Every structure is written in C-alpha cells, then in structure tokens.
Image (cartoon, rainbow, N blue to C red; front, side, top):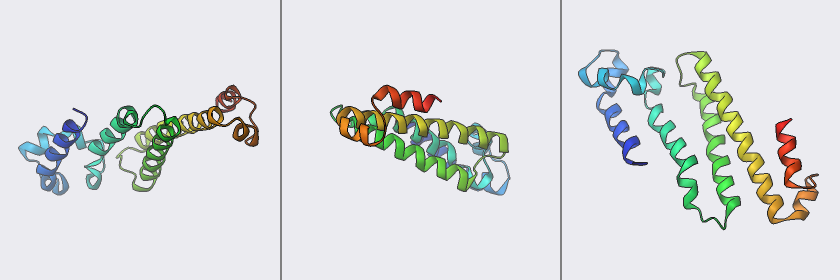
Length: 146
C-alpha cells in the first residue's frame, strides 16, 4: 500500500500527461482530475510526491531502528525542510491560499521535528542540552510552544 498507491497515482498521471498539459481533456485526464486539479498544470505530478512525503513521515521513518531516535528525527526534519523549500520555490498550487496553508503546515511540521530532534539530543547528551541553553527536555518543549 505505501508504495503501490502513490505508484498507481503516478501511473495514472503519466497516462493523462499530454491531455493535462495541453488542456485537452481525455477520459483518463477527467478520471484523474482529483489528483491534479488543485495544482498548476506544470506541477500536475505533485500529489504522488505529497503522498510519498506523508508515507515517509508516518511510515518509512519507522524503518530506522528505535535505538536511533536522532536518525528518525533527522530524516523527518530533512524531508520536511526539502518539501518546505520545494513548495516555496515551485509554487505548485493554483490558489495562493492553498500554497500558504500548505506552507504553514510544513513550517509547523518542521518546527515540531526540530523540537523532537533537540529533545533527542538532550536525552542522549545532557552536556549538549546545557550547551544549547536548556536545562531539560521540558525547556525545549516550552520554548517551541511560546
């Protein structure tokens, strides 16, 4: 499922690519409208990428052993940062309000994963926590809330 559904959606989009880009509807492009209608025509492929981002953050991160929580947090932070930068540089959405809402959610995710990474670093090394100016993991949590 985590790989099959995005791959199937990507296949549907590839099959309807010409009709989507030329704005000449075909049966396939009409059937796959839900996948590309919110995006600029040149960014019609964004939905499968978005699905892979979600699956990576909720599933593939768990493939990293639980003994390596910093690695998990770092991967999630990296994926969130890449998609945040991509959203601002590519601007895939037709409506500006959708772009800003998606960007806001990406910023929130980035900050959450940054806080998790800092908390994991503090848990593994109290000296590093002191060097960053935090007395405990709770201080990090409170700092990101306010």
